[in-house]
Image (cartoon, one colour):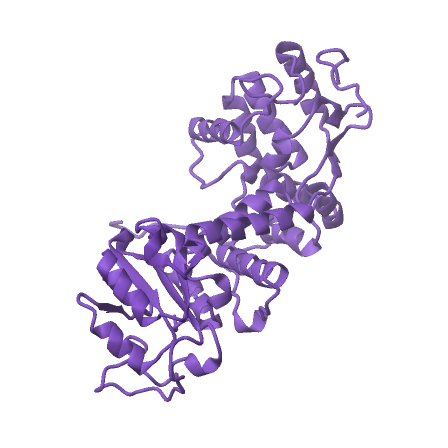
Length: 435
């Protein structure tokens, strides 16, 4: 739409030792996972070992911020004995890794132990030493390189499947945290127990809510099933029970007060439009002038949650306010623009407008911009609007989502008389003497 060329609103509108070969390299489940694998006093796992360590992958990488050389290899008593002969050796049970002081002499000694084996050296470690040291050793991509490559593969696949940018951002953020947690290991090397331990860490260590944990599980399932083509059985990874929380609802008087204390016309219209049409914040900021159909008294919400379009109500009162707003501000591409012409207003700006109004109105409830959408649905239900229509106006895919408002509406609860009111009806309450 050409800028200002039309009449307002008359428009078309989770750790076990990683293994690289067969399961014979895995520790016996009854053994102590935190003990050095050679300790004579500890219960020893029953493990079949090959005569040499050359049959499986040996990984060399940096540890302790590059101050030490780390090595991970399949369990083998003879190899462990050679490793223990290196001065300054250290066993890290939590990472199932051996480490040594970083020096060219130590590195040469380590490489000599695994000569002829399938040795892979992290690129970051390789960069710290002259290239002759690594003759006949295969270079391995650094953990950071592999991390970024995995994230890019997931991002591309999500884009090809037409996921929203918001969902892609959320998925890649979850994935990055997961890969960073197991930075020296690839996703293909992780076990179900590793993933379960990671999820437990998020719940107990990071205080993740059930909904956030479920999102992480969805991301991991997408990574393993769709990208890595590996099984990811939902039953093996339990999903936490969702918390059932009811929304905080503003009363009609509280909503009216919010409008009254908001003096700036643009800010007031924004709050009125969100409430009167039951809009999500993301939907408001994407509105364009042509989405307002003044003839049919409808607002066309395009590309909403789930990439679905819908129509919602256009109030006569709000239409009148929108026309006044149009004359004063003359918006261009977007109905509500920010400081830069042609750019939509920032979500944080709208949140601040609402927060300031709540403060001025003296409302003590814990509410957000989304509370206006909750209030819209609840007030419609209280005035008798059929739940199916409310579902359509809100753009809910399932009626079960909309039914939550029946638990916060006072339409039915308000008609219930408390037993104490019925008990005391007709009696005069008198205070005992001395009180």
